[in-house]
Length: 240
Image (cartoon, rainbow, N blue to C red; front, side, top):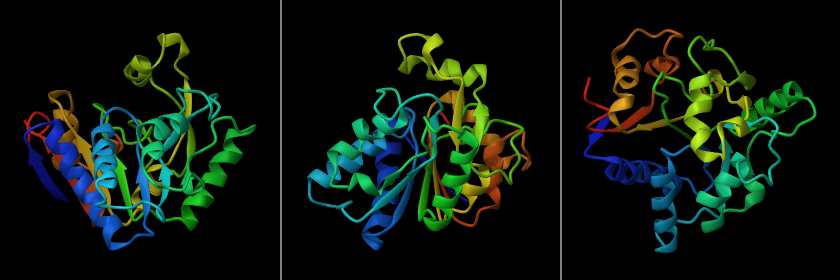
């Protein structure tokens, strides 16, 4: 596990972009595992800037995303399909037919989980980008999630619903369920890039890097992956 500590969120975003850019430049047909939420937005802005400056192309890249809310149509502005289009896909030269997310409006979510797991088997991530929850969750895999899980339906915790409420008109409109890649799907990626900023992530970073590997901190499993880069700002690194 390589630990890179930078000064602030902006530097974290630049460094994270460089890691992803190098993967794309080395393999123009790479499969990128992408994440949603506020943390990766800075990375996506840097990816867009590099594309517009002619430094990188995503024309032959494919992407798979970690998760999607259950109950939101792809056209819903709060869906992760819309999020990814707004913050990245609409601003680079990627073919949207090469972008893959779980279908939150599938008639049977359990069948959709099996379908998405099959997609991931045929599209192993060359790199998987992750954020980190303050309780150590990765994707929507909350504490006590078994490490061998594949794509599954999750009941969102009160803390996660509260964290995501800022993206909705009211907390009542935040979905209570989601489809998420399982921890095994994440660990199957050839390389993992996890980014975090802010003092509120310091405890989770400590447990992820130096704590015991157990399901109380899902991110601790990353200690067992052979190719993980952790990029964090000074505040997130304050307890290391």
